[in-house]
Image (cartoon, rainbow, N blue to C red; front, side):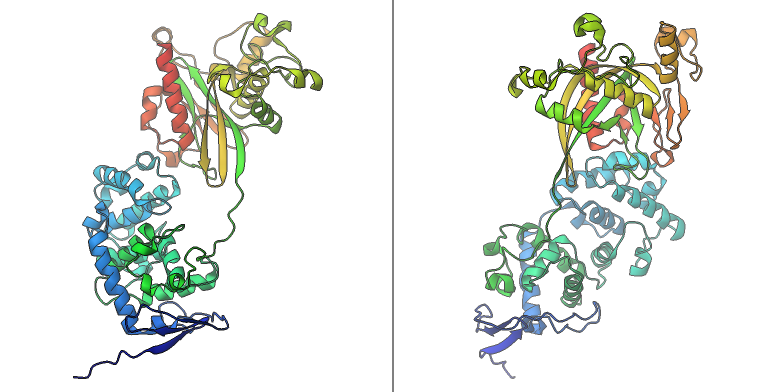
Length: 540
């Protein structure tokens, strides 16, 4: 039997010449010209010319797989989707894990499968139910596409989960990575995977000097991901690669001392693990300022169904408006001041009920305060931020803005009451401050204008449906609007139940506070719902 010699054997990588020692762990480096050739097409089964020579050796790849799988067997996290080969569960986990960390996904995954244990159950559900279970995970388009794909599988594939890449790629929300993960984990097919964690891992293993998101880099990494696959237990190796990238080969401060394959990592051997992969510049953070309204009418509040094309499409929210710069800057300069100044409405008069909803004695000068001079404004005494309460009277200028926005966008007359709370949220590159105001419903904008001319507060206007006397006495009836603007946006009142979000076109609805729990809401919308509930509890 011949024994393979373990003498020192040189091999080459385009940028570096390595000398492998007897333990395959020691490297000496000699710098050469750095040339990264165009990689072969992924799936060709042939190594590209730019792949380091060490990775072309079968013994090197075999040693890498052996150490990685041994580490994975000892250190893998006990995650619920790893206890099953059900393609539906594997698919659900892969969709949820996109842009979301595994510890966060666990409880959503288990809750989702409790409600929709099978593909058929998901296909038969309403989109609103799916979105409600998804609420909090973010990237809600994933849930919409998951629901659409489930219906397509039942309709076009007879409820049998597709088992080829070509069939899976026909489904909404499934790309090359997701298809490879499902087929390799659920069916042990020899399919590669490449996502954020494994992209970073391959960039360091190969010491790739360019941006990892570049097209040439992606072709190379896909080729390596396919070339490294074993003949059996493909899904296990793919999961081990993702686990290593997620828990050890971190974006910042990688735990190289704990890495089972550090001896195979060219970036680690060159001391480049902190600088590889090279990242593209992130977009600058943008600061935004919004005003949100909790419009009350008896025991209900006004909510809006977000139409397609807007962020959080298909979910529900409270009316929110981006503030003009003059109002945003005034609020930033003096948070919480209710006495600052008032802007007159375009027609030269105060909005219904006074700009702030307070009496003329509260505002002075008949409730129609004018903008002070710049000198007087600069000399105004401003309270320290720490002394500003979380709730208080609304500034007249803000009240004017909110009244005009609701009249223009919704066709509704309101009376702003007070600033209730300020909170912040972040989405993508935006950092948003939201000032939450409480307001009272008065009627339709057209009906209120008519009643103002008559100097009296009349009942429902021509466009409203009058409730019966018994309904009014019990307090269960509300004016019902059916208005439609040029943009097709609709408003409807009444006590409607849960609405299938797929049928919504941006309408507004009155909803009882208790029923909001069943509505799928945007992240700021859910915070506003909790604030509305706190207001209701306080008024009891």
